Length: 170
Image (cartoon, rainbow, N blue to C red; front, side):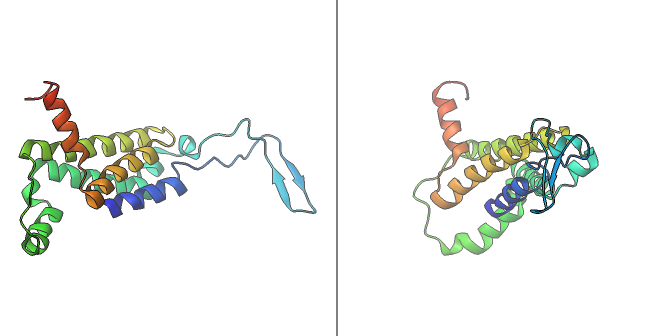
């Protein structure tokens, strides 16, 4: 998941989500010796706001985020059959030592729900035409996924414990 989200971050940072629109009207200055063109930045807009809804939905970063959201939805609905979990249970878990601490099942389910909410919100805002929304959502989801993968720090589990201690969750 971290690799998928890192790809989405890269594509969102270099693609349609963060690009400035190419201006085809207004004034500009051309310097023939240096072969340079200057267009004033005062009226610049985002390329995302000028793109069609189809172009926004077919943006490669948006497609990767939709795939990530689909995997997170699958993990929320049926975690036992999700491909990453099946591969982990069959290939990696038998080679590991028994876990010293185990989170409760309800706290572990908060993490994919949180990731699903972040990625889905980013996709919806991107398709709606909000600049940088997909990039911010991809970065947030990547950071949470990377912290879990690299350091074992599950932000969803931590959030679940905080909400339980505050009495907001049963």
